[in-house]
Amino acid sequence: MAQTLDIVTPNGHRYTQPTGLFINNEFVPATSGKTITSIDPATDKPIATVDAASADDVDRAVKAAKAALVHPSWKLLPATERGQLMARLADLMWENRELLASIDAWDNGKPYHVALDEDLVEATTTIRYYSGWADKTFGQTISTTPQKFAYTLRQPIGVVGQIIPWNYPLAMAAWKLGPALACGNTVVLKAAEQTPLSILVLATLVAKAGFPPGVINIVNGYGREAGAALTSHPLVDKVAFTGSTATGREIMKMAAGSLKNITLETGGKSPLLVFPDADMDQAVKWSHFGIMSNQGQICTATSRIFVHREILPTFLAEFKKAVEGVSIGDQWDANTFQGPQVTRAQYERILSYFEIAKNEGATLVTGGAAHVPSKEENKNGYFVQPTVYTDVTDSMRIVREEVFGPVVVILPFDTEEEAIERANNTSYGLGAAVFTTDLERAHRVAAEIETGMVWINSSQDCDPRIPFGGVKQSGIGRELGEAGLEAYSQVKAIHVNMGNKL
Ligand code: NAD
Image 1 (spheres, protein in one colour):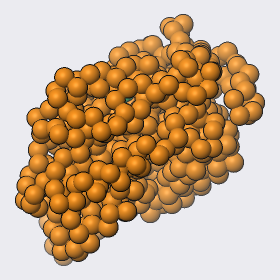
Image 2: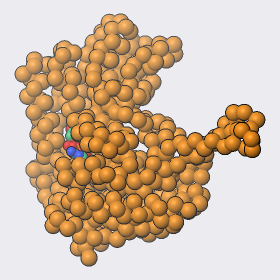
Image 3: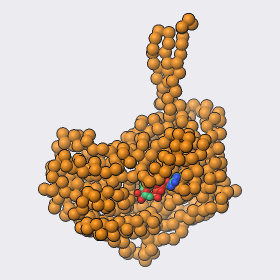
Image 4: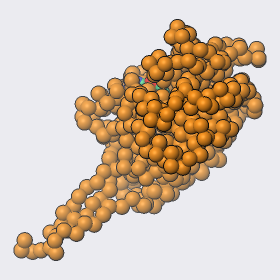
């Protein structure tokens, strides 16, 4: 039996949670005896300790998923009923949204109101959206000659290993589980070691929703051990990963062993272009949201802002006002816009970029240091000041590397061609934003930018119906929307000969 903890969140939600690995719809202890202790980033104090999977534990979970794949209770379940199970899971997530949001806020550091109003809405909507797809994916019939035809079956890929990051714990779980289940796969999902708690509550809801044992297995564990074991396991048919480009590269290498199907969603250094005819208020509002929301910990963060030289002074003055106008504090204050960074490691990484920018000769417009919180209990928290640099060159590290924090560079440009060329001068290609009131220019520039997504007069819009993913070193494949189903299904062609004599 796995150990069980009684937990009370700082905002008063009491719950009982087994800390083990969720395999075959049961919580079992990790054989390794290894654990992960989750830390509240606002106080630097431990929240809870949970089990961490070893390679042997991952093997158990993968074997459970493999058995469930061929078990009649999943394989022969009509697709409509599969969708109903998913819809039931979405209902349970919604019923428990306050608890789930409280745990994610506590564990990750994001403001509670953001976890509740944004993350939980996104997570639930995504599972519900894909529940509708479960019975709407078909093959085709292809006529060839009068005697012959062919048809295609759209079939699951098999056992899917899913590895998620810590920046949107439940939303990332939903992005991965939704399309995989809709297509009839079975899953072993590994959560990020920085945010191991809400996924365990999700596991209890999976069992409650009535999924057959082994269809969804959820393990906590460290990347180098549990993540690597999952990626290289011979019974895993596909790996879907979101996280850093460096780890994505490792995953690709490990998956190559058995030529696994992969989907990677990795890093970015997304550009945002402001043309002289842009609506200035809108440009400032979205530019601010595009880099400073979620503590800047967004893979699509628009972290390079290119502004036409004519309007740069006005933009800079307004942007600085927006940045300095936000409230920084702990997760539980309704006024908090920016909470602590997720871990001490991320906090220190951001502080190191302040040094790098200084040494490179960038001009600091605002920020550039740790933030000193007003509450005594937050004095050891991982708070940084939202930070803006100008007078940077395209070759500086602060311009080229993903900081993954509330840190932005603002660069002037003179012509549209130059803006596009410099926006594309990066190894990444995830998101981009264009601000202009000229319709022709908006669509012309959107087409030329080398990214998987472009926002016109906006930043960070995301919807389960719309494909999400990157080009270049920002990823392979697409998640969400109908495109997300492609990643989790394969097409089989069946050739039929009806002519007796041919
Ligand atoms: P990471 O890539 O190391 O971790 C992401 C996930 O991969 C976690 O679940 C982790 O356990 C797992 N993992 C790590 N090493 C693995 C391995 N060798 N094999 C299999 N799985 C492995 O990211 P991180 O260390 O949490 O953050 C570092 C940087 O990654 C950040 O500063 C940021 O630049 C980037 N990042 C990007 C995203 C994104 O959404 N694109 C999310 C988180 C972090």
